[in-house]
Image 1 (cartoon, protein in one colour):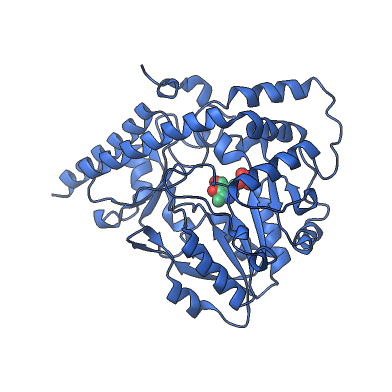
Image 2 (tube, rainbow, N blue to C red; image 1 turned 135 degrees about the vertical axis):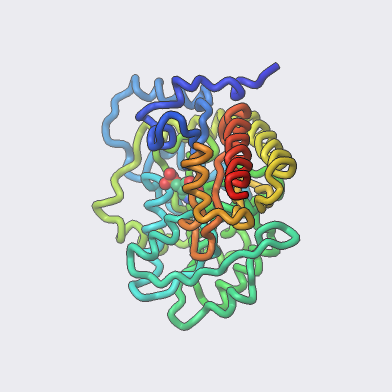
Length: 389
Ligand SMILES: Cc1ncc(COP(=O)(O)O)c(C=O)c1O
């Protein structure tokens, strides 16, 4: 029997309510920005409806206490223990937390280290606010995209303040192992760095185990702020909602201070949706994860059979595939995919210097649409090779 996600209603998906489906002309298949084409879980939809029947007045300043407790319980299950409500600061979404951590934990002209390729707002937060980016390119290795620890060490100077980490990693889909994270923690402690870790993708793991960075030891917990939110696992990006978590209250206070007057207050519909996701969203999430994994495996088989020139390490997490088109000799793979294949992907160049020629593909769509997009890419590449003869 076909899965309901195999039969997405395109009328519902298309339209101006969605940047993914409205930025490009109708003949383009959009597999770019990171949201899913699937409808949200029924308990979440119901919770939003139910919340509308109450008043939409100002919420409690720190957010709905029931939600804070549910987030704490969820973090405990992941392995991050000992949190109280005051160790949480609700943000309007995760990106404002990224910016606030940069502002709070470094100053203009100071250096910040991050692995690249990486979710581009990490890099934008640094350039927007005059911080110096110290990029540590990851390398393909036995366990997938790996951290180059030797190069990492060579980047540190007395002006280095902050380490920004994304785990699970966007765009490579790596889930860092406990021993890799322990090495990073040692590095941060040795050089007295603050750490911002974005763990937004922690619920979308196919292989490997999520280890919350701040759970590694008490000393690292005191130097770390963890960012997360509901939007990747539960497909609620348009509602917003995020949280900054730290055992060190002083970090959160600094982040709140730099956001004074511009951070806004928690959104009541977003909080209702997030609480429902935490309380009742697991069956939907399990089902969705199984569908995504099958999409990932379909993509792997397709690439191996029909596009073997495309470099690809299957992601252990996320619904993103990081594709290396450099061997195909295209001048601009992003433009080629968009104009010749009519498939919109993310240009690798935005994820860090040195990644021109890579493309990021979002496979959180129906299997037939994924197949069509891949066939369009394979067909356009074949045609371009014929043209070149
Ligand atoms: C690692 C990471 N952090 C943050 C975000 C954005 O989060 P939000 O929409 O809650 O600001 C994304 C979106 O793709 C992401 O991949």
